[in-house]
Figure 1 (cartoon, one colour):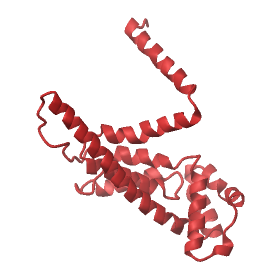
Figure 2: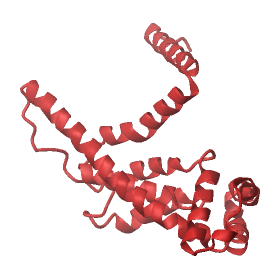
Figure 3: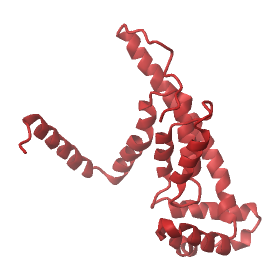
Figure 4: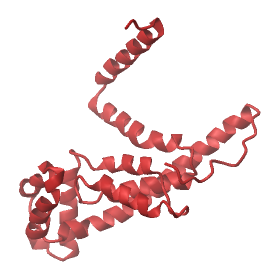
Length: 217
């Protein structure tokens, strides 16, 4: 199949952008990835700001849960439970996107923070192990297949570490979920106001003060 000149030109431009992106410093690439994966979806949402903010809050809440590999499942379950309630429904797209905060690079450090927090909450200061020893203990969780994740999780977390990780994760899930809601709400409202201002500058009268709430994703 012969490609038309416009398609070839577009593909060349994409290849040049990808090549240029690979030459950027690692921290710059990570910053851009976070922006396009987490922030841009909030700004591009045409739902009510609260609808988008609830999606970020739910995604962060479950994304910070210590249930490795199952965060998206919990987001989906929450969405199905709340989709019939307009005041509680949220953006499933944003909810799933923000579970990405838990990944191969952050999982073990997060679990260690939960473990230390849990031990402190229980008053077990003398039982806190070092990071290296903890890493060797929880590595099987990160490396486990989805079908065996619960078995490995029970063996490591429940039998070896007690409930310290589970209890220690709760403050972070609640705190960051709440903070994510207000941050996303601020970003969404600011972008909505900017979009409305541009419409007014062009002489276009918006039909409403902002996007209407919707139960659609």
